[in-house]
Image (tube, rainbow, N blue to C red; front, side):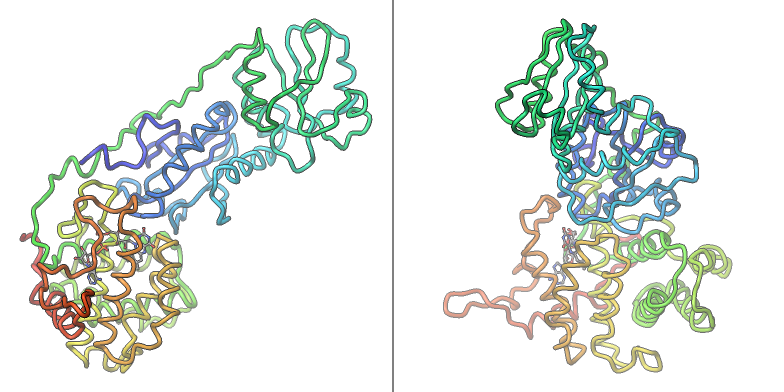
Length: 527
Ligand code: FAD
């Protein structure tokens, strides 16, 4: 509970940012920054957190030049800042140059490879993108040194060592070692390219990468390092007699960064697993409409069409409080009446937040989970509410077969599923989830021929996801992923055939229709 559930803590070698501190930290910072905008409900972000911490630890000594930060977009306090920075998916990696302005929202890294080495090399590239005017304060020269400059040092006494890493053009080892040695005194590290014929010949280098050392007393020699890898080079140089660390890495947390844990302020509330709770559904809709979609400045083209379909489906099928249904219907009428090709999302927020409230129509103003509570803040919550919402919608579509009459989605047994597929693929902040879901959809969604089959399809696919995620880091130990419904919820759903467990799908369908029916949804604020 509490602390244990947070993905990052002050003990990690990185800076935890929030809405209070992000801008002031980045504005005119003497160092560059790499910030991961994540969401504590995003399973992929949970899995990735050890890698990010390891990366932060690995480049801790680069702190005078570039720093690593994190910001949790799932924290209510940070909703607005993530919207302002246009964070659509989690995790999003943004680089910020040193000496940035207040308008700088950074540069996004879009690559699929997020392994430590790749990201670290990108950090180096990014540092090299600085110009002389905006160099980070402690920026060492990362460009290759000139042969004349290196050779002119031969025989000269000095108050420090000069190490030269000779390497191929593609190699990053020289730049990494230069950055690793930044907080050390008594040594200057340079790099040179192995293509410099004169230099290589003069120093007698035969293999790259290699380290060549100029001693303070004027002598010089090639070094014999056991393994030609960054760690060996860096530690060899750090351990030279007379080389000392002059500055301890300081990862100072900005003030006010200690975010109050949402879960410690709210005690775990008991709930009944055989029920569905309106507060989860409304919180999910609230998050979807006011937070997730609100990171999009405008909706146009396919996104706008998809948003209309989504609002159609919920307005027509959501078995909610009258004032909420009315709100959704008003939103739908407004969307349909607009002849616009492009809508600024602000207008939608204005409508749902202000205009409608005046007429007494409103949706939950904040996120509150009951059936979707996790045993810590990082678990369950929003994705749980989305699954629940779509199960409810498929069941509603199957029980009120005329609900979508006279809409663009009339007579389409896949209407809810296709809407979900589009939503998950386009807007859902967990990109990985979207990709996985799309693969499942491509495989078999087209085979769904009736509204009942749609209910079962979603159940089957959800169980497939449960099976894949069982035992993973994002699994809540208090709510292990199981094949659902478990025998205690629905004994008749389970049978045995030739000694093997099988589902009785007729029973499963009947159970789903009951479990996700309007009658089984407990109204707000009761448990
Ligand atoms: P959830 O799986 O969210 O389920 C919520 C509730 O639905 C359960 O408590 C139970 O009451 C009920 N339920 C469970 N199984 C079924 C079923 N088969 N049929 C009907 N009802 C059921 N996370 C990842 O880490 N990787 C992914 O690739 C990924 N893909 C996702 C794709 C989608 C479309 C969504 C909505 C979420 C995805 N997630 C993914 C999140 C993940 O599936 C869970 O939502 C999250 O881990 C929270 O789990 P939970 O314990 O609250 O249960």
